Amino acid sequence: MNHDSPLVSFRSVVKRFGAITALDGVSLDIAAGEFFGLLGPNGAGKSTLMSVLAGLCRPDAGEARIGGLPAGDPAARRELGLVPQNLALYPHLTAQENLEVFGGLLGLRGAALHSRVDELLGAIQLSDRRDGLVKTFSGGMKRRLNLAAALLHRPQLLLCDEPTVGVDPQSRNAIFELLQRLNREGLTIIYSTHYMEEAVRLCSRIGIIDHGKILALGTVEELLKRLPFEEEIRFPATAEMTELCAELRGQGELALEQGQHQFRPRPGYQMSAFYLATERRGLPSRLFTVQRPSLEAVFLQLTGKALRE
Amino acid sequence: MRPVLVLLKKDFTYFRRDRGTVILTFLVPFALMYIFGQIFGIHRGKGYSGSQLIGGWAMQFLLFALVFSATSLFHEKDNGLFQRILSGPVPRSTILWSKFLYGVGLGLLQLLVLFTAGSLLFGLSLLPHLPLLSLVCIFAAAACSAFGMLLAAFAGTPEMARSLATFSILLMSALGGAWFPVAYMPPVMQQVSRATLVYWSISGFSQALGDHASLLGVLPTVEILAAIAAALLGLAWWQFRRGTIFD
Image 1 (cartoon, rainbow over the protein chains, first blue to last red):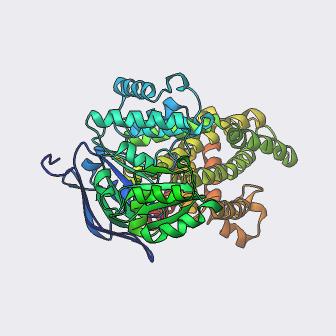
Image 2: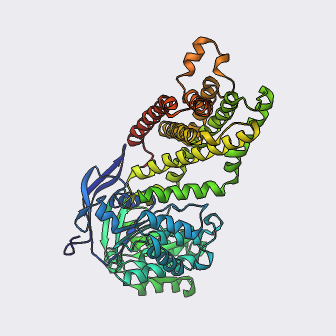
Image 3: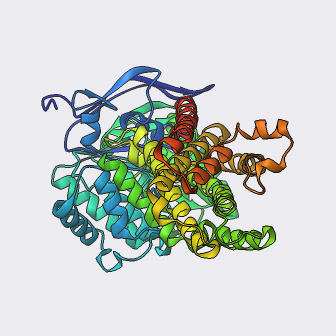
């Protein structure tokens, strides 16, 4: 593998499924050691991008490379671990048997396989359930095992396709901590999610994707700088706020989401003017929450719709 | 080869743990064999009739078992298992070879177990004929396994595969002499019977268990079964390459 260039590169990748364009000219570089996030709603093209990189489908145009090798090349596949969105496990085998099957398929055998299986079961906190059939596991346990199966052969690159769907908070944290530790040890991770909080917590750089296009790319700070406002004020959507809302409408963006108003002031709007407006109407300050905008706002600005519908 | 063996071990572990499948593979055909043996009055020492009865029922249930085994490809695809396996250094052919060889192995096991049971029930002389019988069983199982793969390749969904299987296996079993001797059929139907793998399998069993059984005697039938297996498997693989099972 070529160690001087980016570890992963996409050049104008296009992939169509019939009339649907799943990837529309995606170009992207990911350096070795990055924890890169792909953030987008369902149907944005995240899984298709992962499939192209894993060699599971060929692009209709463009190319994807891992370490200079074409995606799908057997040498590239040996350096890659895939955590599929589905729970790709054999339910009638035990946790240990599942890892032994996948390890065997990856070329591990004998003492090396057993030792690696033991190590991973310990890392995902399933050592005491190694002889349990996977069909008896909780969703969180299955997700942890799903992750471990991709790490058996110590890949250079890990593709995680929404690995925490349907997982309890404890298992989610365990998965996050493991991934962060592995990334600190040098593993390059591409992590796709439609949960903004995950992307912000885990990823050093994020690509926002929708309708097969990368709409924005950068660190969280770089992406937030694209917004025309630096703060966001949330308050309940009650009758007493009606007059305030009428005043605020010309001063920035005012949106309604899940029973709460979100006010994003235009550049130059003074927060003191906001507080004066609330005081004039006798509205207590405890009703208002001022916070930094989120990637949700970035996505809304880029696409005109919410990240989660 | 090692990845094929890994997947084979996995499939046999699954089989061992699935009590329902074990019962359907061994006990149900044994029970039917016994019942029909009583109905047809299979007598001890009448080797030909006994081998036809045992072979007929064994073939019918083997075909069902192997079609269902092949349709497990759909479930593995839906569970994302192909995504995981094929993202690694394992080619698609490994998955198909392992399913085919699993069918051959399971088929051989089933046939030998049922013939052993049948030899106790109906007095078939089995031990002296075991090498020849095993040879026929291997190729009969290969033909059945290839048939299962073919159905899975063309069906597109497990439900369609099961519907096609029920119709085609019952038809083949009836025509092929699994339920009653081909000799009972009109001459035209006896010729049609020769177009089924069930016919050739039962013929092979009878030849292997006959009084003057020899390798040269069973070889033509074994060659026909091998040709059937090769043709069905080739067609199945061609269709798998065109289809979407691995997408």
